[in-house]
Image 1: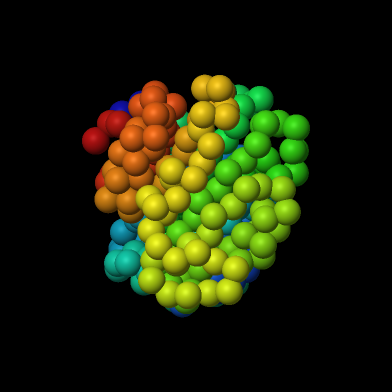
Image 2 (image 1 turned 90 degrees about the horizontal axis):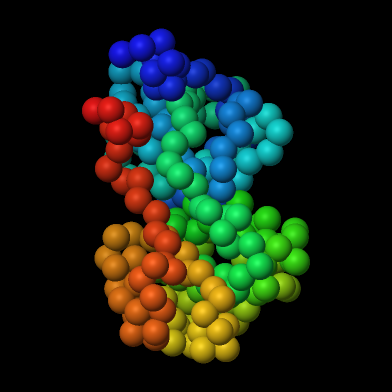
Length: 240
Protein backbone atom coordinates (compact mmCIF):
# COMPACT_ATOMS: atom_id res chain seq x y z
CA UNK A 1 0.00 0.00 0.00
CA UNK A 2 1.53 3.32 -1.07
CA UNK A 3 1.87 6.46 1.03
CA UNK A 4 -1.18 8.13 -0.57
CA UNK A 5 -3.36 5.14 0.30
CA UNK A 6 -2.08 5.20 3.87
CA UNK A 7 -3.17 8.83 4.13
CA UNK A 8 -6.62 8.04 2.74
CA UNK A 9 -7.36 5.37 5.32
CA UNK A 10 -5.59 6.86 8.32
CA UNK A 11 -7.99 7.93 11.13
CA UNK A 12 -7.53 11.43 12.53
CA UNK A 13 -8.29 12.35 16.15
CA UNK A 14 -11.01 15.02 16.36
CA UNK A 15 -12.54 16.81 19.33
CA UNK A 16 -16.26 16.56 20.08
CA UNK A 17 -17.68 20.08 20.35
CA UNK A 18 -21.31 19.37 21.20
CA UNK A 19 -23.70 16.48 21.78
CA UNK A 20 -27.40 17.02 21.09
CA UNK A 21 -30.21 14.56 21.71
CA UNK A 22 -32.45 14.34 18.64
CA UNK A 23 -34.87 11.60 19.71
CA UNK A 24 -35.21 8.62 22.01
CA UNK A 25 -32.39 6.72 20.29
CA UNK A 26 -30.52 9.28 18.17
CA UNK A 27 -27.91 11.88 19.07
CA UNK A 28 -26.05 14.40 16.94
CA UNK A 29 -22.32 14.80 17.58
CA UNK A 30 -20.67 18.01 16.38
CA UNK A 31 -16.98 17.36 15.75
CA UNK A 32 -14.14 19.78 15.06
CA UNK A 33 -12.52 18.93 11.72
CA UNK A 34 -11.15 20.60 8.61
CA UNK A 35 -12.52 17.82 6.40
CA UNK A 36 -14.93 19.31 3.85
CA UNK A 37 -17.31 16.62 2.55
CA UNK A 38 -19.78 16.70 -0.30
CA UNK A 39 -23.49 16.47 0.42
CA UNK A 40 -24.36 12.82 1.08
CA UNK A 41 -20.87 11.55 1.82
CA UNK A 42 -19.98 9.54 4.92
CA UNK A 43 -16.98 9.04 7.17
CA UNK A 44 -15.71 6.09 9.13
CA UNK A 45 -15.94 6.91 12.85
CA UNK A 46 -13.81 4.80 15.14
CA UNK A 47 -12.81 4.19 18.73
CA UNK A 48 -9.46 2.43 19.29
CA UNK A 49 -9.76 -1.23 20.36
CA UNK A 50 -13.54 -1.13 19.73
CA UNK A 51 -14.01 -0.72 15.99
CA UNK A 52 -15.43 1.69 13.45
CA UNK A 53 -18.74 2.42 11.76
CA UNK A 54 -19.74 4.29 8.58
CA UNK A 55 -21.79 7.36 9.53
CA UNK A 56 -23.32 9.92 7.16
CA UNK A 57 -22.61 13.61 7.53
CA UNK A 58 -25.85 15.36 8.50
CA UNK A 59 -24.45 18.92 8.44
CA UNK A 60 -21.10 20.60 7.96
CA UNK A 61 -19.43 23.99 7.89
CA UNK A 62 -16.06 25.63 8.26
CA UNK A 63 -14.17 23.67 10.91
CA UNK A 64 -16.98 21.35 11.98
CA UNK A 65 -19.13 18.41 10.97
CA UNK A 66 -22.31 16.86 12.42
CA UNK A 67 -23.00 13.13 12.66
CA UNK A 68 -26.47 11.97 13.66
CA UNK A 69 -26.13 8.50 15.13
CA UNK A 70 -28.47 5.77 16.28
CA UNK A 71 -27.14 3.30 18.84
CA UNK A 72 -27.25 -0.06 17.07
CA UNK A 73 -24.03 -1.87 18.03
CA UNK A 74 -20.81 -1.87 20.03
CA UNK A 75 -19.18 1.02 18.17
CA UNK A 76 -22.18 3.34 18.30
CA UNK A 77 -22.83 2.30 21.91
CA UNK A 78 -19.31 3.43 22.79
CA UNK A 79 -19.72 6.67 20.84
CA UNK A 80 -22.85 7.39 22.89
CA UNK A 81 -20.65 7.41 26.01
CA UNK A 82 -18.63 10.32 24.63
CA UNK A 83 -19.06 13.89 25.88
CA UNK A 84 -17.97 17.33 24.60
CA UNK A 85 -14.20 17.55 24.88
CA UNK A 86 -13.71 13.83 24.22
CA UNK A 87 -12.07 12.48 21.07
CA UNK A 88 -13.45 10.60 18.08
CA UNK A 89 -11.34 9.24 15.25
CA UNK A 90 -12.47 10.03 11.71
CA UNK A 91 -11.34 9.03 8.25
CA UNK A 92 -12.86 10.02 4.94
CA UNK A 93 -14.92 11.48 3.48
CA UNK A 94 -16.06 8.57 1.33
CA UNK A 95 -18.77 7.86 -1.20
CA UNK A 96 -19.73 9.78 -4.31
CA UNK A 97 -22.13 12.13 -2.56
CA UNK A 98 -25.32 13.44 -4.10
CA UNK A 99 -24.87 14.79 -7.64
CA UNK A 100 -26.21 18.22 -6.69
CA UNK A 101 -24.96 19.75 -9.95
CA UNK A 102 -27.15 17.28 -11.84
CA UNK A 103 -30.08 18.24 -9.59
CA UNK A 104 -29.74 21.95 -10.35
CA UNK A 105 -32.78 23.42 -12.11
CA UNK A 106 -34.92 20.32 -11.60
CA UNK A 107 -37.88 19.31 -9.47
CA UNK A 108 -36.54 17.30 -6.53
CA UNK A 109 -38.44 14.53 -4.75
CA UNK A 110 -36.74 13.36 -1.55
CA UNK A 111 -38.15 10.38 0.36
CA UNK A 112 -36.68 9.28 3.70
CA UNK A 113 -37.34 6.74 6.41
CA UNK A 114 -36.14 7.22 9.99
CA UNK A 115 -32.50 8.28 10.27
CA UNK A 116 -32.37 8.18 6.47
CA UNK A 117 -33.17 11.87 6.81
CA UNK A 118 -29.61 12.51 8.05
CA UNK A 119 -27.74 11.88 4.75
CA UNK A 120 -29.97 14.38 2.90
CA UNK A 121 -30.26 17.06 5.60
CA UNK A 122 -27.37 19.21 4.39
CA UNK A 123 -28.62 19.02 0.80
CA UNK A 124 -32.16 19.95 1.85
CA UNK A 125 -30.83 22.94 3.76
CA UNK A 126 -28.84 23.97 0.69
CA UNK A 127 -32.07 23.89 -1.34
CA UNK A 128 -33.82 25.84 1.42
CA UNK A 129 -31.12 28.51 1.58
CA UNK A 130 -30.89 28.73 -2.24
CA UNK A 131 -34.51 28.45 -3.44
CA UNK A 132 -33.60 29.19 -7.07
CA UNK A 133 -31.19 26.25 -7.24
CA UNK A 134 -34.00 23.77 -7.97
CA UNK A 135 -37.51 24.26 -9.36
CA UNK A 136 -39.24 22.66 -6.38
CA UNK A 137 -38.71 20.24 -3.52
CA UNK A 138 -41.17 17.57 -2.42
CA UNK A 139 -40.17 15.90 0.84
CA UNK A 140 -41.78 12.69 2.10
CA UNK A 141 -40.35 11.79 5.50
CA UNK A 142 -41.53 8.96 7.72
CA UNK A 143 -40.77 7.71 11.22
CA UNK A 144 -41.95 4.70 13.21
CA UNK A 145 -43.38 6.81 16.01
CA UNK A 146 -43.28 10.29 17.50
CA UNK A 147 -40.36 9.39 19.79
CA UNK A 148 -38.26 8.64 16.71
CA UNK A 149 -38.64 12.02 15.00
CA UNK A 150 -35.30 13.74 14.37
CA UNK A 151 -34.46 17.28 13.22
CA UNK A 152 -37.78 18.67 14.46
CA UNK A 153 -36.76 22.29 13.90
CA UNK A 154 -35.63 21.57 10.36
CA UNK A 155 -38.81 19.67 9.54
CA UNK A 156 -40.85 22.67 10.66
CA UNK A 157 -38.63 25.06 8.72
CA UNK A 158 -38.81 23.04 5.51
CA UNK A 159 -42.60 23.31 5.60
CA UNK A 160 -42.17 26.97 4.66
CA UNK A 161 -40.68 26.34 1.21
CA UNK A 162 -41.11 22.64 0.40
CA UNK A 163 -44.14 20.49 -0.33
CA UNK A 164 -44.02 18.10 2.61
CA UNK A 165 -45.64 14.83 3.63
CA UNK A 166 -44.59 13.92 7.18
CA UNK A 167 -45.89 10.60 8.42
CA UNK A 168 -45.73 8.17 11.34
CA UNK A 169 -46.11 4.45 10.66
CA UNK A 170 -48.98 3.94 13.11
CA UNK A 171 -49.06 6.74 15.67
CA UNK A 172 -51.20 9.85 15.35
CA UNK A 173 -49.74 13.36 15.63
CA UNK A 174 -51.41 16.69 14.95
CA UNK A 175 -50.45 17.99 11.52
CA UNK A 176 -48.90 14.68 10.49
CA UNK A 177 -50.08 11.78 8.37
CA UNK A 178 -50.33 8.16 9.46
CA UNK A 179 -48.96 5.41 7.24
CA UNK A 180 -45.80 4.27 5.47
CA UNK A 181 -43.92 6.57 3.10
CA UNK A 182 -44.78 4.25 0.21
CA UNK A 183 -48.40 5.32 0.56
CA UNK A 184 -47.54 8.92 -0.30
CA UNK A 185 -45.41 8.41 -3.41
CA UNK A 186 -48.52 8.46 -5.60
CA UNK A 187 -49.36 11.93 -4.25
CA UNK A 188 -46.33 13.43 -6.00
CA UNK A 189 -47.42 15.08 -9.30
CA UNK A 190 -44.69 13.50 -11.42
CA UNK A 191 -46.68 14.07 -14.62
CA UNK A 192 -46.61 17.82 -14.01
CA UNK A 193 -42.81 17.82 -13.88
CA UNK A 194 -42.49 16.99 -17.63
CA UNK A 195 -39.71 14.49 -16.89
CA UNK A 196 -37.55 17.24 -15.41
CA UNK A 197 -37.07 15.73 -11.96
CA UNK A 198 -34.91 13.43 -9.83
CA UNK A 199 -35.88 11.19 -6.90
CA UNK A 200 -33.68 10.55 -3.85
CA UNK A 201 -34.61 7.70 -1.49
CA UNK A 202 -32.78 7.01 1.78
CA UNK A 203 -33.71 4.68 4.63
CA UNK A 204 -33.57 1.04 5.67
CA UNK A 205 -33.00 -1.31 2.69
CA UNK A 206 -36.59 -2.69 2.65
CA UNK A 207 -37.97 0.86 2.71
CA UNK A 208 -35.74 1.92 -0.19
CA UNK A 209 -36.68 -1.18 -2.18
CA UNK A 210 -40.44 -0.82 -1.86
CA UNK A 211 -40.40 2.96 -2.18
CA UNK A 212 -38.39 2.63 -5.36
CA UNK A 213 -40.84 0.06 -6.72
CA UNK A 214 -43.72 2.38 -5.89
CA UNK A 215 -42.00 5.23 -7.71
CA UNK A 216 -41.53 3.02 -10.78
CA UNK A 217 -45.25 2.18 -10.64
CA UNK A 218 -45.89 5.92 -10.79
CA UNK A 219 -43.90 6.12 -14.01
CA UNK A 220 -40.53 7.17 -12.62
CA UNK A 221 -37.67 5.80 -14.77
CA UNK A 222 -35.15 3.80 -12.73
CA UNK A 223 -32.31 6.06 -13.88
CA UNK A 224 -33.98 8.98 -12.08
CA UNK A 225 -33.90 7.20 -8.70
CA UNK A 226 -30.94 7.75 -6.38
CA UNK A 227 -30.35 5.73 -3.19
CA UNK A 228 -27.69 5.58 -0.47
CA UNK A 229 -25.67 2.51 0.50
CA UNK A 230 -23.15 2.64 3.34
CA UNK A 231 -24.16 -0.07 5.78
CA UNK A 232 -21.58 -2.65 4.70
CA UNK A 233 -18.25 -0.85 4.61
CA UNK A 234 -14.78 -1.93 5.67
CA UNK A 235 -11.96 0.09 4.11
CA UNK A 236 -14.54 2.32 2.32
CA UNK A 237 -12.23 2.86 -0.66
CA UNK A 238 -12.65 -0.45 -2.51
CA UNK A 239 -9.28 -1.91 -1.54
CA UNK A 240 -10.25 -4.55 0.99
